[in-house]
Image 1 (cartoon, rainbow, N blue to C red):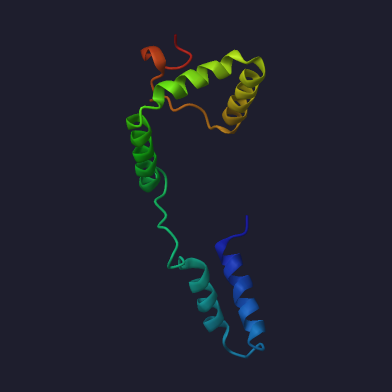
Image 2 (image 1 turned 90 degrees about the vertical axis):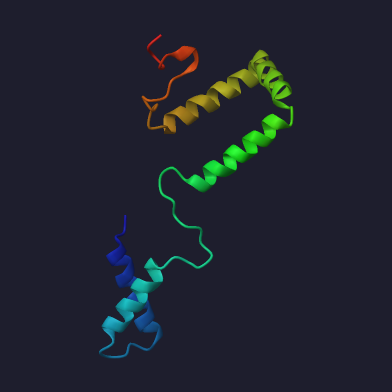
Amino acid sequence: MVSLEDRIRARAHELWEQDGRPDGRHVDYWLLAERELTTPAPDAPPNEGEGNRSATRKYNSRTRKFVESGQVEAASRDAAAALDDPKEANALRQAERAGKARSHGEDPAISHAGGHKEGTA
């Protein structure tokens, strides 16, 4: 991975060349490149870090609306029926395996169905 310093150096050089390589302005170009690369765009959403609260609020709001819509039972029946179709059940299992392969593992603090942690039943 390229360091921020290397990216600033490359951008400063690019700006310097675009301006005709003027002498004695290396600090000016460094500061300009640094500002470009470290100042977020005015329309960029703030970086909330781990545990993105905005995304959580949106998810919770959409989930609440779905529950209030009265469509949960029908969706549950459709999901259960999908497992009855061997082809679709296989596709779901493959998708689950693919997701778990990219995972960093279960959070040990999460309790699973039946009141026990996965692998402890």
